[in-house]
Image 1 (tube, rainbow, N blue to C red):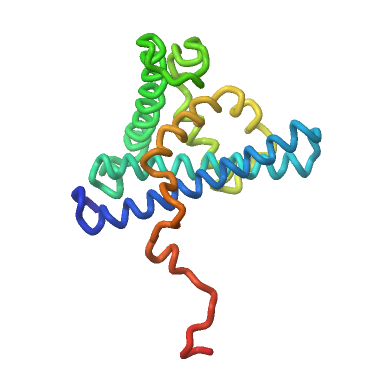
Image 2: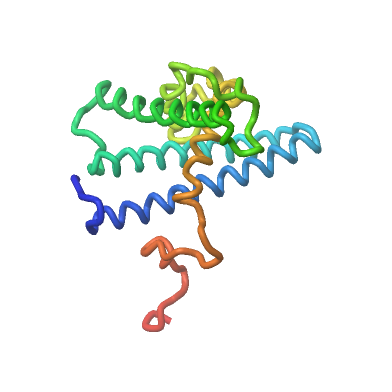
Length: 205
């Protein structure tokens, strides 16, 4: 469905984008908590299991959030009318573009002397995002959490994925906090999402 900035569909789409980013944020914080526990207490099967689940949930919600952003940029809930491999290339191109944009922004800020004090050395950012990043991001979103895939227990190493790509995922995540993260102490109205209730209504009590 096509839509325009500011119309009803766009408003609902932004509400859902906020929800998806909150889920991404929740998953990352859960991952950070279990990762810290693993570092302090040591690795066990249960801690690895919970850390794995939290990180793959982070991957899933970050990917879905980025796809939602792409849809809004395109003014089309389907992102594109293209199908199959052509559609995949468009989506992966969007992910690659924004990952590289963020790296370049940090690199340039360091060169210009305008980077915040907490940034890493310029060598962390003065790189080309690996060509297979978006493809692998999508594969792990699909097979490590989205679908029941046998590769999850055999050839799909989340450890390798983490060490190879985590900084790109993390920067894509933090790049969106200002606009889509929680902005005040009052929890936002997410319409049907925050109206969900298991309480009995008075007429059904």
